[in-house]
Image (tube, rainbow, N blue to C red; front, side, top):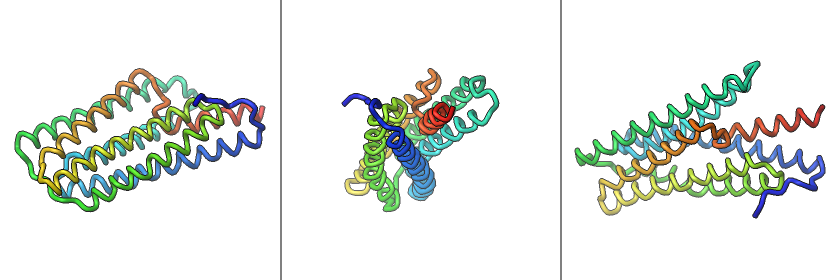
Amino acid sequence: MSITGHQLDEGRRVVLQRRIRWIVTATIAYNVIEAIVAVGAGAAASSTALIAFGLDSTVEVLSAAAVAWQFTRRDPERWEKPTLRVIAVAFLALAVYVIGSSALALIMRSDVEHSSLGILIAVLSVIIMPILSFAERRAGRELGSATAVADSRQTLLCTYLSAAVLAGLVLNSLLGWWWADAVAGFVIAGFAIREGIEAWRGDTCATSVGVLLEDDHHDAHTAH
């Protein structure tokens, strides 16, 4: 299905822009909750994958905040490259940490305790993220917003991340596959590397705030 955006009256356009803002806000808010719960549960269960999952959500939120800060500057274009480089370094640093922690867990054969809370947050993410992704993609296509559609794909990737973590936790709890947690950690590291490379190259569509900024720019242009 292609991106449309044409033949929309101004009333419908405003409705879609508002809908996308609410979806993005809900996505960021959920990521904050997800980060807090995942890191806490991961620390309690000695789960590298859960801690990495929470840290990844934290970096996602921080990257959005960094872009938001950028656009409070008088000359935002001047700060675009430094901001993206900071985001890229954060993701790549996360990847290095997770790879190191996962490798150490494999070498030391670290036992991971059962985490009901960790499994719960992973299950919720597998359910909630596709819903948010579908809603944003649908609104974005009707509005003709490439940024919203790109961000919806980013949200969908979080679903795959959640599924990897969930698989590691369940396999460890049911079958005693202690190494499954470390493998899930490596999967998260792979996603973090991908995010870091995209940010370094200047792909601002990977951040949720890009949607808000694009819509605000359109509103300002329409007002004039």
